[in-house]
Length: 172
Image 1 (cartoon, rainbow, N blue to C red):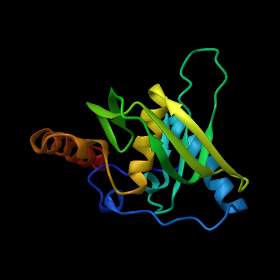
Image 2: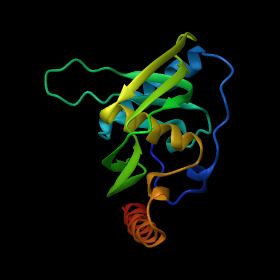
Image 3: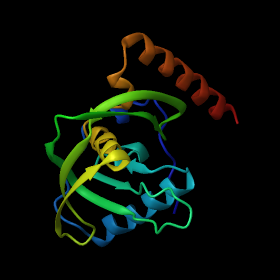
Protein backbone atom coordinates (compact mmCIF):
# COMPACT_ATOMS: atom_id res chain seq x y z
CA UNK A 1 0.00 0.00 0.00
CA UNK A 2 1.43 3.36 -1.02
CA UNK A 3 1.76 5.87 1.80
CA UNK A 4 1.56 9.68 1.53
CA UNK A 5 4.98 11.37 1.79
CA UNK A 6 5.32 14.38 4.09
CA UNK A 7 6.47 17.57 2.39
CA UNK A 8 8.92 20.00 4.02
CA UNK A 9 8.35 22.04 6.10
CA UNK A 10 6.63 19.58 8.43
CA UNK A 11 7.68 19.41 12.11
CA UNK A 12 7.72 15.59 12.02
CA UNK A 13 10.63 15.70 9.55
CA UNK A 14 12.77 17.47 12.18
CA UNK A 15 12.22 14.96 15.00
CA UNK A 16 14.53 12.12 16.05
CA UNK A 17 13.06 8.67 15.37
CA UNK A 18 12.78 6.03 18.10
CA UNK A 19 14.76 2.77 17.95
CA UNK A 20 12.89 -0.41 17.07
CA UNK A 21 12.94 -3.28 19.54
CA UNK A 22 12.63 -6.14 17.08
CA UNK A 23 11.36 -7.11 13.67
CA UNK A 24 7.67 -8.02 13.43
CA UNK A 25 5.07 -8.85 10.78
CA UNK A 26 3.77 -5.31 11.20
CA UNK A 27 7.23 -3.84 10.51
CA UNK A 28 7.76 -6.13 7.50
CA UNK A 29 4.43 -4.91 6.08
CA UNK A 30 5.47 -1.31 6.75
CA UNK A 31 8.80 -1.93 4.97
CA UNK A 32 6.93 -3.38 1.97
CA UNK A 33 4.64 -0.32 1.91
CA UNK A 34 7.68 1.97 2.09
CA UNK A 35 9.40 0.18 -0.79
CA UNK A 36 6.23 0.42 -2.89
CA UNK A 37 5.94 4.13 -2.03
CA UNK A 38 9.63 4.75 -2.83
CA UNK A 39 9.56 2.94 -6.19
CA UNK A 40 6.31 4.68 -7.16
CA UNK A 41 7.60 8.19 -6.30
CA UNK A 42 10.14 7.35 -7.93
CA UNK A 43 13.03 7.53 -5.50
CA UNK A 44 16.05 5.54 -4.31
CA UNK A 45 15.47 5.85 -0.56
CA UNK A 46 12.76 6.52 1.99
CA UNK A 47 12.81 6.87 5.79
CA UNK A 48 9.84 6.15 8.08
CA UNK A 49 9.71 9.79 9.32
CA UNK A 50 8.94 10.83 5.72
CA UNK A 51 5.64 8.99 5.98
CA UNK A 52 4.96 10.38 9.45
CA UNK A 53 6.27 7.47 11.53
CA UNK A 54 9.04 8.29 14.00
CA UNK A 55 10.69 4.86 13.83
CA UNK A 56 14.27 4.00 12.87
CA UNK A 57 13.43 2.26 9.60
CA UNK A 58 14.74 3.08 6.13
CA UNK A 59 14.46 1.45 2.72
CA UNK A 60 16.71 2.00 -0.27
CA UNK A 61 17.56 0.66 -3.70
CA UNK A 62 20.21 2.51 -5.70
CA UNK A 63 20.15 0.16 -8.70
CA UNK A 64 19.12 2.46 -11.53
CA UNK A 65 20.43 0.75 -14.67
CA UNK A 66 17.76 -0.63 -16.99
CA UNK A 67 17.78 -4.44 -16.91
CA UNK A 68 19.86 -4.62 -13.73
CA UNK A 69 18.38 -6.61 -10.85
CA UNK A 70 16.85 -4.36 -8.17
CA UNK A 71 18.45 -4.59 -4.72
CA UNK A 72 15.87 -3.39 -2.19
CA UNK A 73 17.36 -3.01 1.29
CA UNK A 74 15.33 -2.73 4.48
CA UNK A 75 17.28 -1.39 7.45
CA UNK A 76 15.99 -1.31 11.01
CA UNK A 77 18.04 0.81 13.44
CA UNK A 78 20.77 1.59 10.88
CA UNK A 79 23.89 3.29 12.15
CA UNK A 80 27.12 4.39 10.52
CA UNK A 81 29.93 2.62 12.37
CA UNK A 82 32.81 3.86 10.18
CA UNK A 83 33.30 6.48 7.50
CA UNK A 84 36.14 7.39 5.19
CA UNK A 85 38.14 10.61 5.44
CA UNK A 86 37.75 10.89 1.69
CA UNK A 87 34.59 12.74 0.63
CA UNK A 88 32.43 12.84 -2.45
CA UNK A 89 29.76 15.26 -3.61
CA UNK A 90 26.44 14.37 -5.18
CA UNK A 91 23.53 16.47 -6.26
CA UNK A 92 20.94 15.30 -3.75
CA UNK A 93 17.19 15.52 -3.87
CA UNK A 94 14.53 14.31 -1.46
CA UNK A 95 11.01 12.96 -1.83
CA UNK A 96 10.01 15.31 1.02
CA UNK A 97 11.46 18.31 -0.82
CA UNK A 98 10.21 17.70 -4.39
CA UNK A 99 11.87 19.30 -7.40
CA UNK A 100 14.74 20.77 -5.35
CA UNK A 101 18.34 19.60 -5.67
CA UNK A 102 21.67 20.71 -4.24
CA UNK A 103 25.26 19.52 -4.10
CA UNK A 104 26.06 17.89 -0.73
CA UNK A 105 29.48 16.62 0.36
CA UNK A 106 29.60 13.52 2.56
CA UNK A 107 32.09 10.73 3.39
CA UNK A 108 32.76 8.76 0.17
CA UNK A 109 32.52 5.40 1.97
CA UNK A 110 30.59 4.32 5.06
CA UNK A 111 30.17 1.09 6.96
CA UNK A 112 26.63 0.65 8.24
CA UNK A 113 25.29 -1.79 10.82
CA UNK A 114 21.56 -2.60 10.93
CA UNK A 115 18.95 -5.27 11.55
CA UNK A 116 17.23 -6.69 8.47
CA UNK A 117 13.51 -7.34 8.07
CA UNK A 118 13.91 -10.78 9.68
CA UNK A 119 15.82 -9.53 12.72
CA UNK A 120 19.29 -10.57 11.48
CA UNK A 121 22.28 -8.35 12.28
CA UNK A 122 23.91 -7.00 9.10
CA UNK A 123 26.93 -4.89 8.30
CA UNK A 124 28.13 -3.65 4.93
CA UNK A 125 30.42 -1.01 3.48
CA UNK A 126 28.84 1.27 0.88
CA UNK A 127 30.41 3.64 -1.61
CA UNK A 128 29.35 5.94 -4.45
CA UNK A 129 25.60 6.59 -4.70
CA UNK A 130 24.81 3.88 -2.12
CA UNK A 131 26.99 5.67 0.49
CA UNK A 132 25.30 9.01 -0.21
CA UNK A 133 21.80 7.50 -0.12
CA UNK A 134 22.24 5.53 3.11
CA UNK A 135 23.71 8.61 4.88
CA UNK A 136 20.85 10.79 3.56
CA UNK A 137 18.24 8.32 4.86
CA UNK A 138 19.94 7.86 8.25
CA UNK A 139 19.98 11.67 8.55
CA UNK A 140 16.17 11.57 8.29
CA UNK A 141 16.13 9.36 11.41
CA UNK A 142 18.01 12.15 13.21
CA UNK A 143 15.61 14.86 12.03
CA UNK A 144 18.13 16.20 9.54
CA UNK A 145 17.42 17.10 5.90
CA UNK A 146 19.92 17.49 3.05
CA UNK A 147 19.19 21.22 3.00
CA UNK A 148 20.65 21.44 6.52
CA UNK A 149 24.08 21.07 4.85
CA UNK A 150 23.51 24.19 2.73
CA UNK A 151 24.07 27.87 3.44
CA UNK A 152 21.22 29.54 5.38
CA UNK A 153 20.26 31.60 2.32
CA UNK A 154 20.09 28.57 0.00
CA UNK A 155 18.18 26.58 2.63
CA UNK A 156 15.67 29.42 3.04
CA UNK A 157 15.18 29.68 -0.72
CA UNK A 158 14.48 25.93 -1.06
CA UNK A 159 12.14 26.03 1.96
CA UNK A 160 10.12 28.86 0.40
CA UNK A 161 9.80 26.93 -2.89
CA UNK A 162 8.75 23.85 -0.95
CA UNK A 163 6.12 25.82 1.01
CA UNK A 164 4.72 27.19 -2.25
CA UNK A 165 4.55 23.68 -3.78
CA UNK A 166 2.87 22.39 -0.61
CA UNK A 167 0.20 25.14 -0.82
CA UNK A 168 -0.40 24.41 -4.51
CA UNK A 169 -0.83 20.70 -3.82
CA UNK A 170 -3.24 21.43 -0.94
CA UNK A 171 -5.50 23.38 -3.31
CA UNK A 172 -5.87 20.44 -5.70
